[in-house]
Length: 286
Image 1: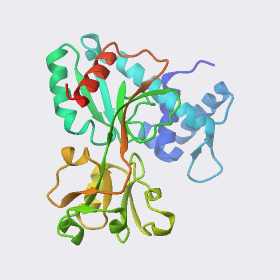
Image 2 (image 1 turned 45 degrees about the vertical axis):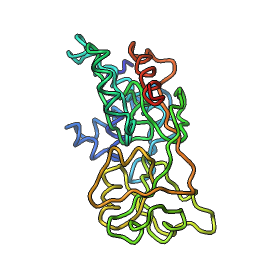
Image 3 (image 1 turned 90 degrees about the vertical axis):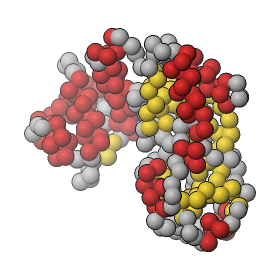
Image 4 (image 1 turned 180 degrees about the vertical axis):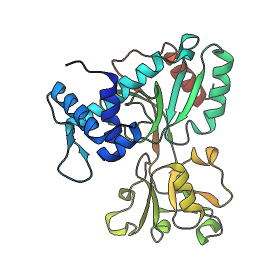
């Protein structure tokens, strides 16, 4: 049986939509035809990719592995067929939030000066690896522990944590805050790409309420309207100023590592080593 790109696109639509019905509507095809396409793909691979035992479809363990591989394959095909790639292949730098903090603009400016023939695209991707494992970017700026298989990391620096509170709140009147000061408030947690968890607090003094969000915009909004407080790193104030939010030093939380990450064993963009070099120089103050 010959597999085609449509089989991969069909599987990814099902994985992302969660039901055959919504995936079929997205692909403008019938549900029976989409189900047959999925079965043919599973027959070809010899594994079950989707658990159909519930109303809302769930990926199997094999399905989750194949999802990343299928996404990376389609991204590579889309890049190869993009006419723009015939003239200049962009270097795609991903990040889920805050990029390189205060060094972001200097990085982009120096890159344009030193490599005018290679576009550097800064892409925010709301994903734990900023799209790296799915092939959406060539290299990524990530914070916290990176456990994705096949990913190489290099520590750039460690960022101090800051408390993020609503302007006008009692907390905003203080010059510095501790974890205990925040515990009475709901804590805004970015469950997709954030580095804050309730494990920061001692077990006996953890906050009892949380507000879960999926991206930085939702996180900022929850704090700005006074529904929660948050914890981030020193890079966030540089990238996300907001009139309804105040950033304060957090005195008793450990720093967060900022890493450069790229995939092992895949053809790397030829300019990737130059970006690594430039990022090192900027954080070192050179």
